[in-house]
Amino acid sequence: MDQITDSESQIIDIILVAIGLLLLMSVVIVLFFYFSRKRIAKTQLEKANLVIEHQKALLQSTIITQEEERKRIAQDMHDAISSKLNIVSLNANFLLDETLTIPEANKMGDSILKVTTTVLESSRRIAHALLPPTLDKFGLEAAMEELCEEVGDARQFDIDYRVDFQSENITADEELHFFRIAQELFNNSIKYSEAKHIKLHLTEAENKLVLFYTDDGKGFNISEAKKAKGLGMSGIENRAVLLDATVHIKSEKGEGMEVRIEKTVKS
Amino acid sequence: MKEFYRLIGDIVIYLAPIISILYFIGFIKFNRAYKVFTFYLFFISLVQIGAYYVGRGYWCEPNLYYSHYYFIAQFILLSVFYNELLELKWIKYVLGAGLIFIAYQFIDDPSIYYRYNSIGMFFTQMIIVIYSIIYFYKSLTVSRGFIIVNIGIFMYLLSSALIFVSGNIVLSLDFSLETKRILINVNRFLSITFQTLIFIEWWRNYRPKKIV
Image (cartoon, rainbow over all chains, first blue to last red):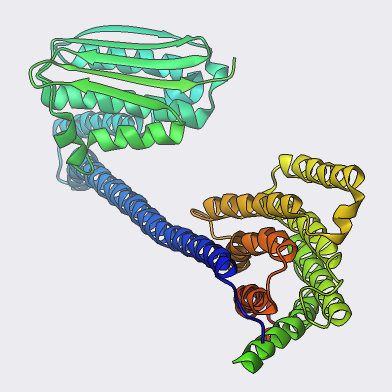
């Protein structure tokens, strides 16, 4: 049996302690890695849940919007078409009466003509509101101008509009999104803002198509507006996402609002 | 107690080829990193068995030159292994520079062949340890394969580096066999931990599974 001398045992002690320390260090690092990974996985899960929540909210707002739109169309059709056609049907029934005098028949015919004319006009208006034929036939530029003119004619707004861009740079779908956004912005101004002046510029500069919109109405709180599901703001943002565009909305109570939507386009 | 350590030593020697064979089962099926690692296991078990039979398991017998094959092969194969896992271009350059340095050491002093190359061993092991730390970092967010093996490589190479580095002191100061045995046993303990982790990796991720 060999004897271990003092100096030997000291050296060996040092080596063993050092190895022990290295081992301890490596265990600590491995544990650190393990717990960091756990925590990171947890945060990632939370993030993924947030995304899912957001998508759910988006879906919900889309459905609400869709339902509201259906309700509006049903209402429009009922008020403007069905009820009027009822009158036409009633009058036509009277016409079948053999005891009817000619002046009475003429009166009935006249009334039928009047009502059918308004029904025609109404159905044209409803169809136009759903999808303006101008957009399809003449493109965004013409449709935007028409929209601005219509809004200007109907309400007491002073509208300053400028539409100037190369229409071949965006697709038909994208044109529709831009049009709907403008429509929604006008709707908001008409419904809530009590604005006097509205400005809408759709221009192209440095490979960017910019929709710039301001009104001088009573403004709103942005975070509150975003919470109101199914209403304009989320719709605008959703369309901007589809357009792959950035949205900047600026508004304060009593300060009007300013919206800037920018989309990068190929030149 | 001596018998117990002897048994552990034997397990370390014979477990190495067994694990190599286990890894060889899936050799064709799995990726290149897996193939390189299987090569590593094979080569290391060959060196271990060679050294064991030449030196009959004792440290001070003239089987020391096996240590060069051991650490150079380890450096090359684990560098290639991490090159596959990490996909970093500079690993190849580090490998080249390391090999040039070791070649220079042998040209400068050929007698190093009969000693421990403490410096070479230390540097090559530390380079691999650095790779394993980078791999830990990269595995934080994305789950990647070979994480248990990575833990084993990290712990074993970091701790055992000191045993190999102290090899020359222990030999040149002519320490008693008892002292050498302590170091041998510590190394055996570390090796068996490493091998266990390699086995766990195989069992959890690479063992042949019945297709249900």
